[in-house]
Length: 274
Image 1 (spheres, helix red, strand yellow):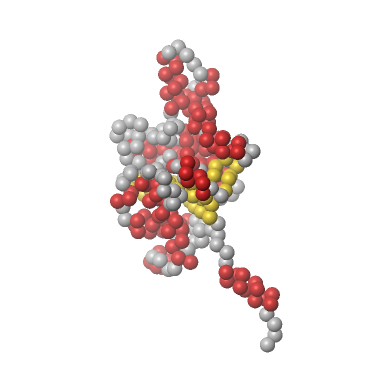
Image 2 (cartoon, rainbow, N blue to C red; image 1 turned 120 degrees about the horizontal axis):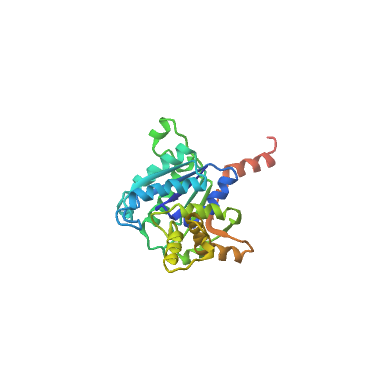
């Protein structure tokens, strides 16, 4: 089970959609969790909340996620919210869904100027630990209600700032899933650099008596090709560095070694009769 957590409706789609789609294609069940309401984040004034809610649902479908959730905190004001509340809501979902892999903004990317990104990353980090047996018996009412601890074994931290890439330790080949990533970005009609920008460019050129063959002959093709040709350049360049067509990079944190298992293995192999 994986949970891809984002502060805004275009975070996962832009930075880690290829890897999310790839893991789902390999057998994971995926969930998309958005923390903000994306108010004032639409291309048209007043459009934000409603359109971005639709976009979040459509992006989840494009990635193959089973379900999308939204917490509806106010956009760009999440650092004014109680961290303990955000964390508790994430712990509830992690336990309910039995999540073992999470995607989130890197909580230690100090060069990211968007406060929501840092809040989201830190909330996911602490919730991942506290939802597990190692985090203690936090929120025992959840356990008494029938939920169980979950074990977050893998964390994929993605970042927006170039400086954050200095912490990268995992490169994922998304070449076979680049079209999934493109479609997820096209689903973001209300905000972000994707959505309907392809058809807008096509219409603008048509008014000038011109056309761009790349954009095809219909709106859907124009949007898809616009995103794939122009917005995926960074991921194409990343892939080229490693001999891949397209790639995404992460600060990856895997499961900590089980000390008790190591002790038991040693004892079983070295114990002698009294």
